[in-house]
Image: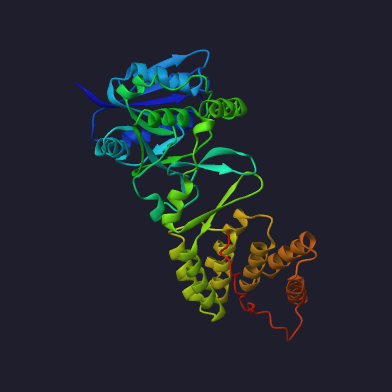
Length: 421
């Protein structure tokens, strides 16, 4: 029987991820005909024995390397053994959602001259890890760099739910027609565990093939679980620049501007994606609600905004303050805790959690939190507010009569004119 797809999974140890990956495929098997080829690279944690048993039961085909081979060589080995019309290279630190493989093949057959298809990859919290790779010219570095353009966006954001053509998609889950892969000579084996996917996609486009991102194929990607993943970063980067540096082109704005976003380069070679004019107007409306103490309306607007863009911690802090003013202790605590996890060195979320504790009648906890704040941020402009809460805690401890221990949140300070980010 002719097979439609061969799923090639290179592995080295990390048995728990390999087991989860294979189980996720088996639990909701693709409708089309497929095979699984696992290329094991000298695993010594029980992975090889686990895979050998599966091969003996006819669940997959196993290739064993000892000593281990890098990603590109392992993928090329799997491709040589593949019987399917399409090859899908898949990291073992992934967890497939139903229909992922069917949707990737459907995208490949929807357009002419497709050389590669990439999937929507999600972090475990279901924010975006990959929805296409774009290029930007970094003036501080004086060179181009590829990056995951919509990283950390919400899963349901409109920007990540359109089929688009990119220069590059990630090799963590990449479909390519087998005939084209062999025509191109496979992955360049000079790359060691990095940039072989970037190079392959650029070679495809150089030959006139399309590289497509489809949001309909979804997988969780735990990212970076391969041992030695970045050990050869400098060498790989130099090779990529040597092969393609003179032909790179920036393309990130063509994806960002239609969605209402702009971009700013930071001094350390990082990028900030922030709302353009249309989303700035939305932020202006939120400010009006804050100034009018319409806290329920602010929360509703923030929750709608969360479906479109990734959150800065200051937006979560604002949401926490709104819940606090509404007396919604559980919701306020959750918002401030999330804000603190995003920005652990800011006093704002910590102050929010102290106020939550006081509002919940947990005065000892509130006092401990405020004391830490005073030690960490002795010059903060909110110091007087912190000291007032410390006094309330002290009064409650000695049981002074006539003291009102009920928490009264301060009026909410309107956010700045510019969208946080």
